[in-house]
Length: 271
Image 1 (tube, helix red, strand yellow):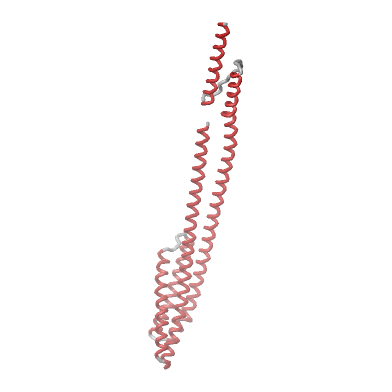
Image 2 (spheres, rainbow, N blue to C red):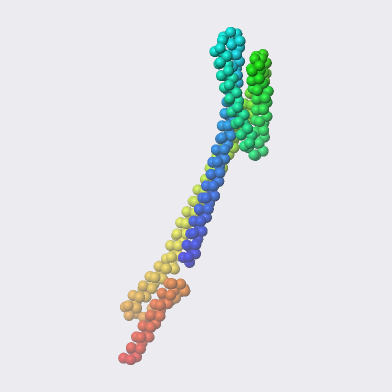
């Protein structure tokens, strides 16, 4: 019986450990997913920020180029070149980040749809707006530059920001859902631990009662038989109720009592 109890304890501990490992693994995956979604959101935010900064740099370069053409001298030309280089460097970084974004787009249906919409808005923004502005500026076609900025750059930027906002809202919703799932897993783990602790307490009470009935009570009874035998009372009946170690002890007490009874009877007959 004790072996069965120990086996049950071992199974209970293994089950609790397995559940804990399962929920910890799920929460670890949830944390990784939240981090990945956060990186996606940061990536597109940086892309949008750099695109806006590039447009501002292009506007600054256009102003300096116009000033240099109006006789403001070498300083304006140098400032224009620096602003144009800053804009092209920003756009190079934007292209690299967006290429990475396209390689790692969201895989679920809604996320992929929003990602593809973001790609379309980006292409329209950079092809029709920003790149055309750069080419117009390099050829010093200021009328085309400002026309493209007003008619294409600004509207395409607004459309890209709108697509970015939709993407960000979806990312936020996915993050919240992942966090809620992690909290639910944690709550399930706590319930499992509480149930396991409750079962362990019940098992301890059961073992206490069972141990008292199967071990302590027979030992007390055996002690009483020893006391009676020591006092010379060989009439008390010794009952063997089991075949385990306690039963073997009671059987030995019974044999000892019977042997002493025969010895006493023999002595009395001899007297």
